[in-house]
Length: 389
Image (cartoon, rainbow, N blue to C red; front, side, top):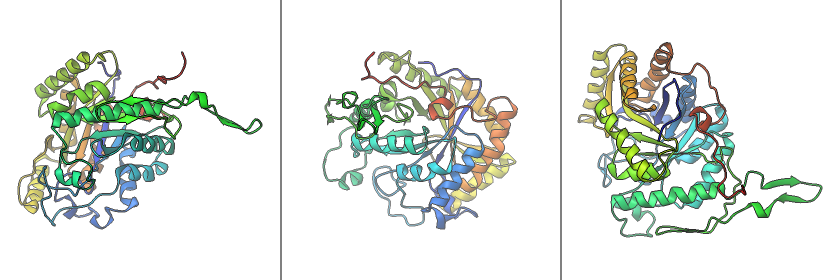
């Protein structure tokens, strides 16, 4: 399960409102009045692209944000409400040229036919820079928005459903061969119907005939990613992902997590296929460690409790963060997805502080070297499974 070899560190940023700290929206310059504007998201993605990052992810959910993972919390002192991640990525795509765009989608309540069509469209709009972050939904209040299932099942069952969801999406992306469109005005033939294929997926969770109504995306297969902070998600990475996000707390945990994914990948019979593994880190960056720590303490005081996360929370300088990332890279990670604690402060600290430091060490690109997201990550364009040999 090797990731494509590269002398560089791959770097992504996870965008979520004003930042990952619940009190981020109250910070100077956070722009809380612009969180639901296209300009806010365009500015953040442009900042990430200026640092030559590989891609950004857009968080999403099917219910209001909550400090309680199981149900709404009723709080009104934090950001509540979101824009649709796929539509936001599509709006930003024409304003960018190189950076990958990876929206989050819930596989639990969203039909794979709709997701395949939406992400294929994003790949066209972005000229080959689309990806997908698949997630599950365990919250009963989210299920009640749809009313189609009263029992959402176990965590393991939801991840199994997500794996089927990915398989359907991938088959639908391949359901048009690359040369299915003829577009010959002289003969009146626009499409070769013999090169559109039913996917005929029959599984426990989905029954999908196909083909898609959207031609095969420019990348063939847009990047499929998933977070595996829960061990129950390992089979999802093993069977269906091009890239997985892990949440180790130190290098030893990173090494163990990488080994666990490799073992699951081998068991799934996909050990030879490339898979990137990124470490997720929440970052609070300043010119001195004590300044970063005090800023986090101020944010915690405004929030009313200490900030916690499924991922490692880092406070310090860009140089110290570079040291940490290099240590974790030696543990087997090929890249990192950084979650800015306060987007207005920590995103520029990543692009203007960390990125130049990594570049100085010869670990980050000095120019974009590929036009597609798969190309930036060293991943080949897959052959179409339905095309004749």
